[in-house]
Amino acid sequence: MFSFSFMRVRPEGDTLRVADLPIRRAPVIPADASMAAARKLARLKQVSLLLVERDHQIVGTIDDGALTADDDLTEVAAAMRPLATWLRPATPLSEARELFIRARVAILPVIVGGFILGAATRTDVERARS
Image 1 (tube, rainbow, N blue to C red):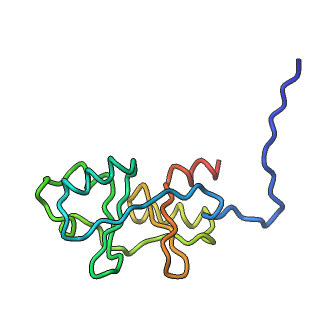
Image 2: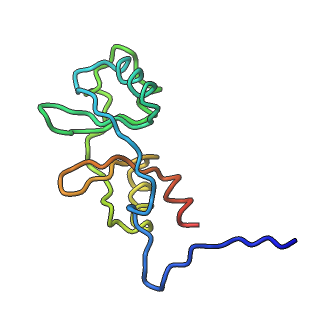
């Protein structure tokens, strides 16, 4: 009996990009909510990244590090990481990996044209590159 496995072969110069990864949901929580509320939302939605909203704008993120570390009564705004790093669907995976390393995070939002599509994880980037 023979067993075959097929690898996806990309033409030369056809770079893997963030758009080739699974994009995960990223729920939004108000900046003035408590970390207890953030944990509850993350558990309910089964996610490890929440986007933080203030005055109808996304201003930061809460990741699983903050979700496990901060006190229940801490305001989300005090625990969030300002939205300074994100990915675009056209970002090559090699560049995305460098962004993950520099930001020291496991998950980043994916944004295009001012719209947040969701989030991508470093694990997905590493898996797709191998």
